[in-house]
Length: 59
Image 1 (tube, rainbow, N blue to C red):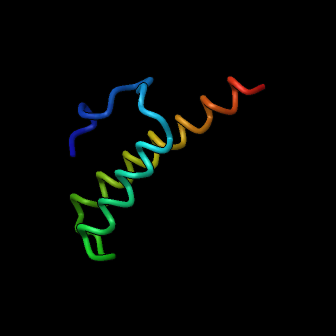
Image 2 (cartoon, rainbow, N blue to C red):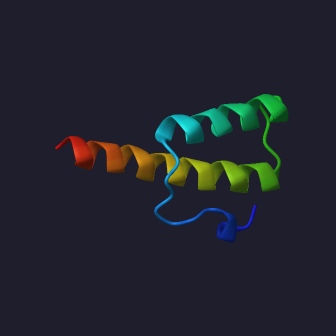
Image 3 (cartoon, helix red, strand yellow):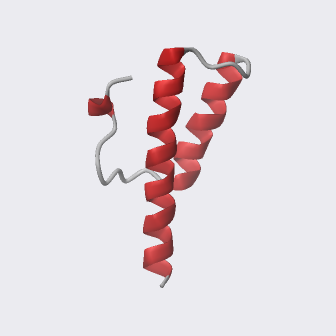
């Protein structure tokens, strides 16, 4: 997955990104290829940003 596909400041919620992460693991059968691992890493970064955004808003 190209980094261009993940938009900085994404408006997706942490729950939406988490759902994509879960779906990726299900499709991969628990073992990620190099391409899937790259996609997973980008999704985790996006998920963490969404979580941080939610914490900052709550503060």
